[in-house]
Length: 311
Image (tube, rainbow, N blue to C red; front, side):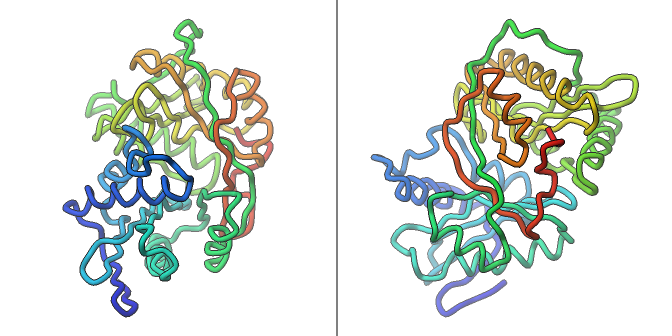
C-alpha cells in the first residue's frame, strides 16, 4: 500500500471496525452539522456490513500509528463504486482522503472495473473537486426517497433468495447474474446478494416469468444494516430493459413493500437519479418523497445504466 510522510494506507482489519465506525459517524455528522455527530446514522451500520461483504475492498488510513480514516470499495463485476470515505475531522485538509483514493483506484484497476461511480454531497465544491482529480464527473442529482410501507399492497409472484436451499442457490444466483448482465454488460451483484444472505441483512427478491428473471431487488432491513431500525432499504433494484420495464418496476416495488411488511418495517427507502427520469416519476407516483439529495459522479463521463429507459 502507499505511504505519504506519516500517513500510511493499509487494509482495514476487523480490530479497526469500532474506531472506523466512530470516525465515519463523527465525520459525516460534523460535516452536516448534526447536534450529536457521534450518533449520526442512528442504529444503521455502513462500516461493519461493507467490511464483512468484502474485507479486501476496505482500506484504513493511519497517522502516527492511529486510525484516522477509511474507505470501502465495492466490485459489482464490470461496475464498481466506493464509500463511505471518511476522515476524522481533526485531520481534515491533510490530503488523507487523497491517500485513501490513490489506493482505492489501484483496487478498482486490479478488479478490471469498467464503470465506476460514487455518491457525494451536491452542495460541496470541495468534495466534487476532490473526486474530479481522479477522473470522476458529476452526472446526476440523486434523491434518497422514502414511502410508508403498505402491508396491503398486492404482491406479485416472487422468489426470495433466503428461501433457496443450498442445491437451488447456484441456479438462483445464475439467474440474477443473467438479468443484471442484460441491464449493463458485466454487471454482477453476486457478492452483494451473498453478503445479504450470509449476514442476514434482509433479502433479495427476484421476479420471474416463463422467459426467466425480469426484476431483482437487494434489500437491507432493520437495525444493524444500511437501512436502520424500522426501514427497508432497496440498495439495488432493477428490471430487464424492454417494453414492459415500467410495469415490471412497479411490480418490483410492490414486492419490496411485501418484504418490508414481513420484516416489520414501516418505511421503504430507495435511491434514484435524474438520469433515470421515468423511474423517478414512477416512484413519486407511488408515494415516494425525497428526503435527501446528492450527486452521482461517474468515471468515465458517461451515463452507464442511468438512462430514461433503465428502471
